[in-house]
Length: 221
Image: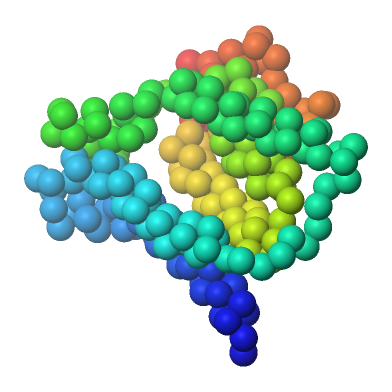
């Protein structure tokens, strides 16, 4: 087996390992176990989770960057500016969408400062304007950034692996959201696509407000 093939196997393995570890540590089962084992330190969990997730990216990103294989395809000259523009817009969308989240809570700084985090407390469901068109805007922007690139074998392997992970990961994430929001989130799933926006499936502002007025039992508050 040549060096290039071994490099690709190591890259794919590292992405799969990252996805498994990330999903396991984000699961409610692991969180509950850690909260029971370390109740007085659990407030640091989300911050440590995010720091660890960033550190674990070092290996697959290094393997991706260090691959020296030739490009498998290049965009035709008439298509390349379009692909580059889509990739740039997706990057900007990803960055701008960060402002739609409570950054300090998402990172875990609020929980760490307040020395408090509970698995039993769920904030009311909310929908930004982007979430009225796609349930996972970050995943959508990530897919556009990935698939708008010219690819060598390492980039293609990364694109396929991450796409599969985002599909599986979004399902796992939504199982937890259904546990938290019940019928309210089920109706949201039926109304809005998960990863790719569709022109005929979205919520108007009024429809989103109506959905958010429904409690977990499916009746107006």
